[in-house]
Each structure stands twice: as C-alpha cells, then as structure tokens.
Length: 515
Image (cartoon, rainbow, N blue to C red):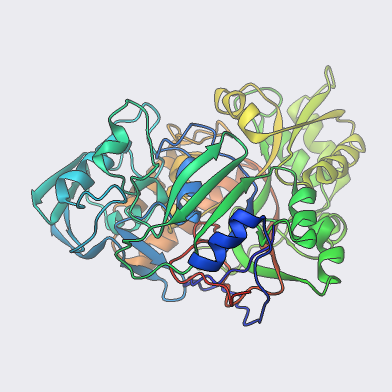
C-alpha cells in the first residue's frame, strides 16, 4: 500500500515537512474508494493494545493516535499550557472542585449528543476500573458529576492545581454511553474524533474510516490502517518499501539506511523519554543501596550513548533531562569507576551466588545491544548477568509483582500527565501504581505529596528537583540515556508534524495531494 499524510499537531518539539507527493496505489476496490472519497494511509505503531480497549490502559494511546479518542482538554507543547478540546473552558470553583464547560454541538460517532451525563459516565468508568489510570484514579479524583447539561464537575480529595492537566490524559478520553453497555469497552462507532474504527485484527491492526459528522470540520482522508508491529526493524523496512506511510519509533540501527533513502524522511524531536535500567529494589541483591550504586559505577554511559545509540541520544544525568526546568542545575552524568564499584560490592557484602537477569524489551530494538554492553560492564566487576528478550506485555505482570532482577525499558515522564507529578507519583511512591522499581521512601513520598498540592509553579518545580535528587542519591535505577523521538515517514507526505509523545497522528486535516 502507499498513501500520503498531512497531520496538524501543536508541539514544542515539532518537526514539520512541507513536501509534494503522488497518490495512493492500493488494490482496485480501495483505489476506487480513494478516488471518490480521499486517500487512505498506513501507520506502523510499536505496540498493540494489551487490555482490549479499556480506557484506563495503554489502549487509550492507540485510540488517540488513531484520531478516534478525544479528551476534554489538551496539552499544547508549543504554548506550554492546557488548551480547549471537548471542553471550552474550566475554572476552580472551590479548593476541591473544578468545573469544565463542554463544547456545544459535539456528537458521538453513533449520532448521540455529547452531554455532561455521557461524559460523566465515561470518566466514571475509568475511575471505577480495577486498575485505574495513573492520571485519573481514586487517589487523585474523588468524584465526577454533571452540574447541568454542559458542565462536568471534578472533585479531588485534596486541593490540586493540576486537574486540567489530568483531563488532558488520553486515559480520560470520552466515549458514548453505548460503548460500555456490554460490560467491556467498545470504541467502534462511539468516539468523537475525526476517524471511527470499523474493524480490527486483534493484536495486528485497526482499520478506521472518516467520521462524516466530525465537530471539528470536514475530514480529508477516507480512512487509515494502524498496524501494531513490535519489531523496530520491520517498521523501518515498511516505510522504505512504501508499505507504511509513517513508522513510529524507529530504531537507531536503521537510521543510516533510512537517512540515505531519498523516499524517506527521518523526523527527530527531543522527548522526555529516558532509557532506563530498572532494578528491583525489593529483591536481593538490589535491596542494598551500595549494590545499586556499584551497578551504576560499573556502567560507561558516555560510551553507551556513542556506540549503541550512535550519538542519537545523550548520556543521562538522572531521572530528568538537563534541559527540563525541574532538573538539578549541577547534575552531571555518572562516570564509570570500576574500582569504586568493586568497593561498593564489598560494602554490600555481595557474593555471586547466582547470575542476575536483564530483561530487554523487544519493542526497543536497541535494548538487546544495550543489555550486552551492560552484561560486559558488570562482568568486569564480578557480577554475572544473563539476558532475556521479551515483549513488554508478556513481562509486565512479573515486573509489577516484583518477580525480576533488572529490566531495560523506557518511560516518558509526561505521557500520563504533562507534568512530572504523574511520573514521580506512579513510578516511585510507596503505593505508586507503576512502581516497577519497588522503591519506598517516606521522605520522598512527603515531597511528592507536597508538590501535588502546590499551585506555585516555581515552588512545585523545586520540590520535583528535590524528589529527583533522592532518586539519584538512592541509585533507585540507572538512567542510561535521554532519547529522542525518532519517526520515519515517506518523503511524499505533506505538512506532517511529529508528536514526540506519539499521542496524535491522525487528524481531520490530514490530507493527500491526490493521485
């Protein structure tokens, strides 16, 4: 298949193409449809939904990038602020209450109107989930109610200045009441966005058609197919062969071939994403801070960034990137010191009674090579390591349960909520819902709780800085490199704007120049 794409996204890290193109060349039936109704495109995504279409899960990201799911608010990176989406305005009406005014004239893809009652029902479904969304769960939201037909009230257990940020999380996307009638979540025909899902091949692809009655205006494309391809090399190959029009998150190992191909454009953007060696702090030998510090001292992060990442990533200085306003100003990259690492091992009383295992997540193709580098570095200080590769969905239950030693993964700090509070709370507090590290520190928890209630931005950022310093001092994990978002698109795409968080790909004004 071949097609072309035009996407409009506001982002502070935007890379924009202004390119000309030829048209889609599919099968006869699809070609006739394209000629009459517009072109169709193919998007290769790096992860499939793992929990059917439950909004509290990562499936919400698939529905969002596919142009189906929309939220009340939206974070605009270019402006650095929350902007209207399905809600046009909002205000804090009391210390614990926020009112959101809904946009008039919006209807779901099944033809029913978007009312306050419908929005409340959708949000309540997320709030009541057995495993609530990290950005929108009972710990941070105590109630949702309809004040009148166009006003939704969000109540919080403690004062929170970040409620509008939480309503921009894709997990708070709004579906019609009919989406929840069967006891499972059915997004087909029940979104508000410019594209409506019409069929799926489970774990393989999602097919979408245009929403003819989209509130945001005419939709240019006839539709699209989003494919779920975990292998990064395959995503890179398909954008070269023309089987895909855009491939999200291509591996560094494919960059040379992609950048030398005149029919492909590589897009890079800074992103709040850090490749991380997660260590299970709740399990020996990682429950000893000296052992964790020994692991950190054994690794050469500068060499790792230069070799495996071929200069496409920067060695990390800690849990935050140096450019972020909440990062410590004096933070530097930890330097390899094998002698110090061996002394720390002695202080920890470590004996190599069993090989430790690193799990390398296959969705990030480079992690297999990263694991090999770490294996060699740890071998040099007397720590034997084995490597296992696996899809993230297959190992997540063990990670959350603490049944692992080390895992290579990456976490985007702003993906749950466009503020570090989501990352710091979910990933590192004692009761954090995504605390893969199984770290628990009361002083840290108090700082994060204070930050969550601090309205003054500078004061809140200072608290984030102090929280990050605790994580680094305790060597909770080894933050390896600050990654770029790297996507590849066909060079005949028009006006595509990259979203480094991979939340938005398909839009109403996505268009092609025609055959």
